[in-house]
Length: 487
Image (tube, rainbow, N blue to C red; front, side, top):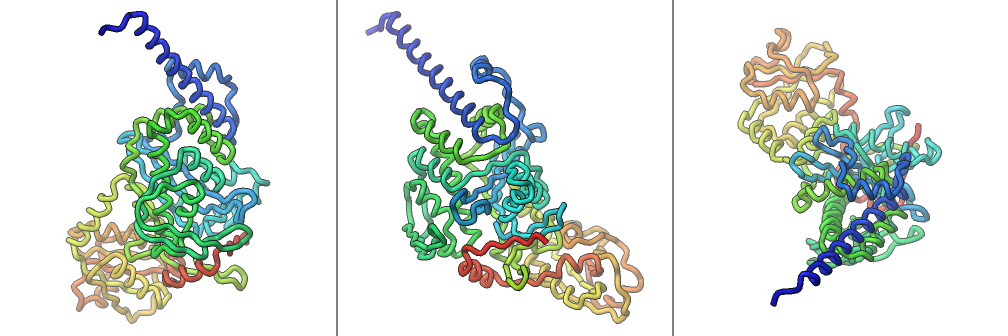
């Protein structure tokens, strides 16, 4: 039976009216939420002007980083007002968006990374930097967040284009607004010392398997670390899992076309998020999100958990108090830079390691740094962490010291991957001609590369290395102990 044209017209008109009403509602909620959460100068454009630009399908504002092909957003999770550790960043993560390939990568940075404030020469755990900045800049959240961003940028070599700060209340409300999130828990969790209110403890338990988590449970799942065999680093992985599950739920048709759920979600964000993304730019991000492949997010955790990890455990003293911190396992940030730059395709790093293994270079180390322990540290680094099979320490009876560290390639460039890794990561300067004065010391060794350690890298390796077990046991016993050194 053929429907009359008039009925078809009215049906089409009704659908079109619903679509326009939904678009107007969504545009208004984004606009009003953006005006609430952004702490950069507000747009002078009225809502109607902004709505007209959307309806007319005009160009959206260009996002920072878009021209370079990569947008990096710093995500900071804090407890929030009225909770222990109010402005300590429990979560530090970079959401990196490749606008050319539409890939997404999440890079998690541990809260105990030992950071330096360049302008003040102050050193502290990176999770204390936001609070330090708020104290320094009279509670100016924008300047404090930028301070964290500068440190993260230096650590990863990635420019930070935007930041987003979300507190615990906002996280819980946002998850509840979308009807919870679906996750698969890989193991039974039983934590009898999960931090509760007023510096108390409570029990958090979650069985292995599939769960739909409400906001409160999702927060505990993202924060728990006592019963995780990987400690803080396992927690970072769960935080990435929660983010991906929330993204999947938000962009499902059940949420995007659910007016009450969307309204609650945006209201929760408006009350509990601070960012330097403008309201207009949020529209650009929404348009970009339609193109991104958010089902295949690359998850990277910078950790110190195994021999392949890019960080190691050390400690510092704040007065008489000993605190464990995480520092680069090599004398600079080069490995973290490499990981961050290749976050969309970590196979590049894997292929590089395979080439180094094929070269199977014999490396001789000669210590001319005046630090008797340095040669042993470098040998351990190359043998245990880098996986070099042939590393020897040779002695030179002459008492002369060298100011600068050199890596001498005696193969005539036949093993370039090994040389490049040593030069970049140790770090060292490259040379293809070993001085005559050192040839006698290695005459009985068939070395491919000779590393002569100089005084320039002593300070890069002078922090004592501790075990992961010590680090974890200390953190388990000191949940609420957070120290800021502002000297």
